[in-house]
Image 1: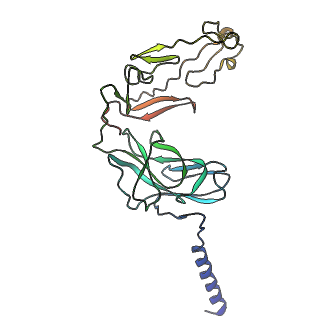
Image 2: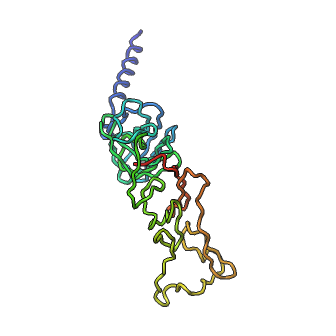
Image 3: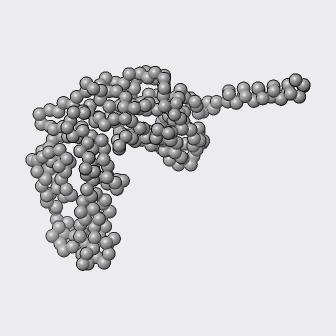
Length: 294
């Protein structure tokens, strides 16, 4: 090897050493301990989305980060602490890194899971070295995906009741779709599970009763017994609500819509209407109660 080749080799070694030791101290735990199926993207002040092949993902809104970070989502393949009593994991645990990276705006993470059991919760660890799971109960579950908002990164996993967990409702309540409810007053389960009261009704004694609307101030709003609002097109009748159906303007007078039907015909799902997102939500459930919740 001549002198030029020796100098080039030495330069390459130095560059490799510098590259391997240049981990940003402001980007804690850059690599994490997660392994396996990994999604990696650089996300900065403009926000962005990172997703791995399983569908685990994070959505970072604009302005949530002060600068660019390399964000990674990995399946954790190493040993994990046992879940809290009465729970077992309902799928993989995912490491979102850099661990403990804080966001100035809430971010949205999505976790896939494998379960039709009721009573699901999200568990999280600060990182793979943490020995105690914390329980988060603010997630939404649709099909086999859990979605929740957080303000920092860690290890997340969906859990469900283990085979020995049971729901116990007191004598005044009934088990309906993973909740103990009073069917005498519960508007979503009035008299029996899934018997929902309509708009303007309340559950009283297990029966949906029309609620008396108090009179409005004269000249400010339409009286309860007033004639329908005059109109020339459907858009003039829109009350801005999704779940009560689309209002129309037949024959020059506004007519109330028909409430949206969200029943998907599957007895193993809990069906509801999400007014905030203008969608029907069909969540896995067990009407028979043999699969139970905590």
